[in-house]
Every structure is written in structure tokens, then in C-alpha cells.
Length: 263
Image 1 (tube, rainbow, N blue to C red):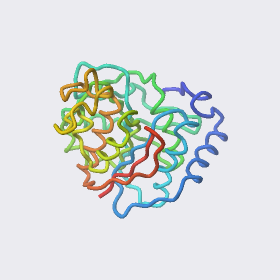
Image 2 (image 1 turned 45 degrees about the vertical axis):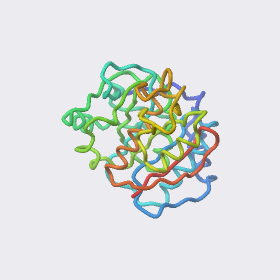
Image 3 (image 1 turned 120 degrees about the vertical axis):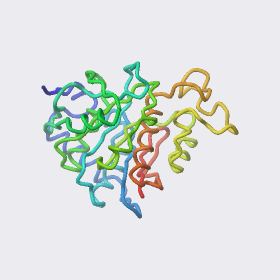
Image 4 (image 1 turned 135 degrees about the vertical axis):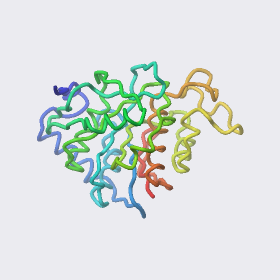
């Protein structure tokens, strides 16, 4: 079973040639960047290609100059779908995503490993654009033919799950999420520190209410995190499990930003 493209012609070019050329252009036109250590994760903005493509290109261009891990690429994206299990993640029930460029298989063995680690994976249809938007970038920049696309529901706290047994088996972590519009700098600082507290609602006492309007009603430390916050928290958790100790800002425009997390 294949999930067919649903946003082709709206979020990106439906024609394979034009799509490949546009993605290559976003990557080629981005400024050159490097990191002084082994790359563990990328944080990229979400949105249609005309909106997020230039900044996404800043992140994916880095993949052209660093050794890519041979292990599985994991793509994390926020979801508006609610889940009863606060630690659950979502994955489309299909065997593969189709893009105008080719098929991208969903790594079923990795889903089984998550289940054995006690992380619930709900096979729920993906009706949202974020994963679909970024797969062409992954296909062009890495040549991958399979990945693990996971969606994180609003209110979820998946970073608290038992990811240690599976994190070392993952290759590159790519997290597609946007920063809180009113707290971009605080979020950038939190990513630079690889600080999960900001994104899980456990903000330092000296800065009460800093997450108001992003995590949930009231912005208190008990508020459920937004889907974007949960994606960023999980990306940082996985990167740290893979040894990341540093982050580098690759580009930013408002609440759209690209980061490299490395060790």
C-alpha cells in the first residue's frame, strides 16, 4: 500500500523535473556551512516549498559535505491528530510514501523495534503536508530509498519514552518544526543549549510563562506541549542519546530556522 502525494502542485511542483530542479536550487543557493563534529540531527522549518525551501536548503546542503550515517534516517513532524497515549507517535499505515521523484519506503523493522522498546506507534493515515514536503529534500540530498517518518501529536510527550535502546540504531534525525512566534530567540537559545525543558513546558522558574500561547492554555509548566514543541524536544533527546553536545544555527527568518546538532 502506497500513500500517494496529496499536496503536489500546492506545496511543491508536481512535475518531477521541476520539483528536482527547485529542490536542487534551494540546496545549491544556500550558503555553505560546516560543523566541527559528527552530525546527529537537523532541525528544519515546515511549510510549503516557496516559504521554507531556502532555509531548508541551508540544512540539507550540509549533508553534501559531511559523512552520512549508513543507518536509517528518521523524519519527525508535528501532527494535529490527538492521541490518548501521551508517549505515542504516529505513522501512516502505508508501506511507502510516493513523491513525484520516487517511492520512499517506510522502514517496518524500525517500527517493530520501537514497539519492543515500549514506544507505542499508532498507524494513522497522514493527511498533513509536512512529511510529504520534506521527502523530496531527503531524496535529493541523500539518495535514501527508505526512512522512518513519524508524526508527533499535540500534547504528546514522546521525549519521555524509552528511546535509548533504539536511538543508536538510527542514523540522521531530521525534525521539521517551527519555533514559537513570540519566543523565537528563547527557543533558539534552548536549542543551542540542547535544553529539553523549554520544549516540554518545564521552563526555568526565573522565566515564568515564557511558553504561554505555544505549549497550551495559560503557558504554565503543566501545560501540554504543542506538536512543534514535542517534535523539537524529541529531536534534542534523540540527538543527545546519539552523543550530540552542540548545536549550530544555519539560518533563520522569524520563527523559521534551521539548526545542526552535532557531537
